[in-house]
Amino acid sequence: MLRDLFDQKPYLKRLILIILLIIVGIIIISFVVPLFIGENLTYEKLEQKIKSAAVTYYEENENQLPENGNSTILSYETLEENKLLKPIEKYLKKGVTCNAQVTVKNVNGTYSYTPYLDCGKDYTTKEFYKKILEDNEVVTIKDGLYIIGDKHVFRGELINNYVSFADNIWRIVKIDNDNTVELVSENSLDSVTWDDRYNSEKGYNYGKNDYNVSRIKNALNDLYDSEEFISEDDKSLLASKQYCLDARGNTENLKTNLTCNKLSENAFIGLLTVDEYINASIDDKCSNTTNYECQNYNYLSSNERLTSFYTITPTNANTYQVYYVRNSGEINVTNCSSIMSLRPVIYLSSSAIYNGGNGSVDEPYTIK
Image (tube, rainbow, N blue to C red; front, side, top):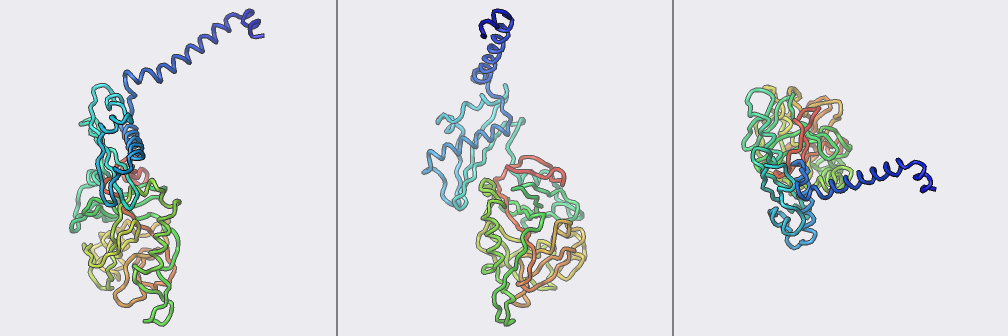
């Protein structure tokens, strides 16, 4: 039947032949031309390609992975020698020259793979903390980035320190002295008790304000373990840190003070200290937990997504109370058995890479 149709309408045969030739041509262009002129990948796609090659390499060479707490560098040449990548110039525009490598870190059995490209003036992979420092000059009298001790701390109200990460919006609290970046959730999450154990001082289940054995520590760890909160891929970008557990007094001056004497064990999740909340305010009358002014000029203060939330800080006046921040922004103490929201804190690794955004609410930073 087709033969009869072609005999009657020979132009159909020519049309189908032309279409087949076009398809064959496209296949040749897609698969053959890149062998000669390269793939012309964007730098971001090239970084991803190098990362994927590194993951494949270590799947076949597990004995070369770094031990817990250590890191190693995998050269591009090794990936090329193992036929996992082509010569790097095959992926680049003509005239562009790049050096590349991958840093692999082991944090409690979770491996992060960070590709680095150095293409001179054309492109250089940039760590996230460096981008923050590049975008924010250090100030002393207004909203912005301050130096307190050996840390870079955001203070004030109108600050471009928003980060989109793990399907959540966060605020940058500070860059620590090891270049890890502290983030706090912009939103209140699960409501829990800080602790509800029997307290001998009160003779009732008011709880104990020892974070190391608290219910809230367990709740945070459960939240961290949840895939819905942070995926395994995103966890590879985090750093394990010790959180400050110092007890504080109501009239203790905590302004421009982020020193600590009592630390938690290393953990991937925690809470704000009351010191951090106070230091986020640039109101001159905010210096201790009794000052209502601490809610002023403070990006950590109330917003429409926040309910009253716990800090990690116990009072030094007794064994059953801790500090929390009301949804109106004031600091107060409450029995550990009270139910308040979680506002989790995490730290991004110093090797987390800037991906995009300018830190504003409309264009938050993203990382990779």
